[in-house]
Length: 355
Image (tube, rainbow, N blue to C red):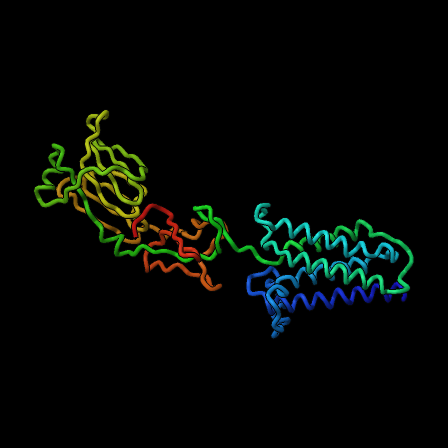
């Protein structure tokens, strides 16, 4: 067998097993793989014969060792006494990367999982290739090792493909769990946002305006604390504290050492406020609420005065609003997106809100 024939056979074998591998991934692997990004992958899809699950799982490792060993043999010439080192090297590389997928190793960028059958399949492939090299009589008798220019590309291709072809489409979530990056939006209805226009007054103070409001049928609720303090604003003798996304607490600040609670203005989605000419202006997601700071404390709402926020930018890194591969467009008419739900049913909220 001439040198050209020897290299041609090994190159042909590498091409044949590459095609077999593409057919396998296109037909048998349901999970997302990097190979799915190739535009021609659909051409390799057909009815793959039914095989035991262990065989299906280990077949890529088997094919990988054969492909890389034959490619390496195509690029070099080794005596029969040393040709067996080629499949041995690729078997060793496969074992190293397989062991790196053990859970306790903690390498998250390797998307595959450890499987002993993968190692056994790689060993079988290495043995078959070594036997093939040994039976290829009259191989070139020269012993020409690979040049660095060939070693680097071969190692790079071989190692990258050994890492596994699964696309790791999982994301990190606030509870430190990992799950699919596909999430669905959680809405708070506009009805729930825009109908809770309430002002509560404290009966335990001597403020004339609040007492008049109570006498005229105003709602009474004593101070219940501030859950998520935000912006603080001072206007005349009054102190305003934003309880984020819930509303504004108003205090009599005449005695700065002992502010007295006067009222709570409920504004769902409140994060900012301003007071001008005796009127308090508060944002309510995309609306602006105006409340007169004198009896009867009239409450006005201007709907859609502010733009709808880019809620997708609030998602964890790489997460997207998507279901069954189709991107979900935000339905602004449905309400405000206040959070998202992941595939296992867990819900996460951008803010502390009540649905």
